[in-house]
Length: 267
Image (cartoon, rainbow, N blue to C red; front, side, top):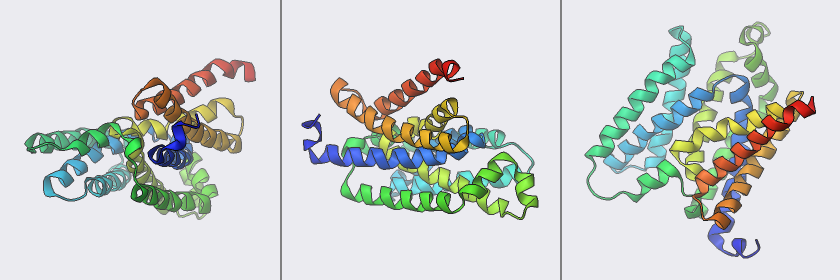
């Protein structure tokens, strides 16, 4: 184990896994409570359109993908409210359109673009010091938003109408949560890639939900699953020679499977 972290790139990878795990599990808590899991899937896959556009125009694909992700999340919230459609209906449309646009753009590219593979499937071992600074900055912004408005976000996750009647800024909180989801998804791309990023917005909180009787415990277990699963999956990938992104998601899925087995005994 000590030999594993003797390398600088493994130290950076572990730090990235811990930060991303904490960030994803904190956001996942509200994603599961508010039943926005499919929105996370749609955001991550729609970001492919922004990434492809960035590659085609010479812009940073990560920032283009992030812009598309945030725009998709906010547009979904706006249309679902103004058009009286459910989020899953709107995101289903954006999901298909974004993927189609991304595939069309990628097919038109000429040459070799190794970053495409990295963004699709993740490559945590290539995380640089600059990537860590960016990750820490995004995590600080999102976690600060959650810490300041935790009770308010919890209120709108249960009953928006009651929260609105009590004078809470429901619209601001809702769109703020959607933006936080989009940024978290794009940060997760560095860890597990577009294909698996949405899993980190569901599994930690779902595992905590299975084991807990109150929401404080659920939040704590979500954090433990996110951080422990990310670090454990990274270690597992090293010893079993597996892709790190897949190993992280599989390790978290194993923790969720354990929660399914042991929940009846807990009762």
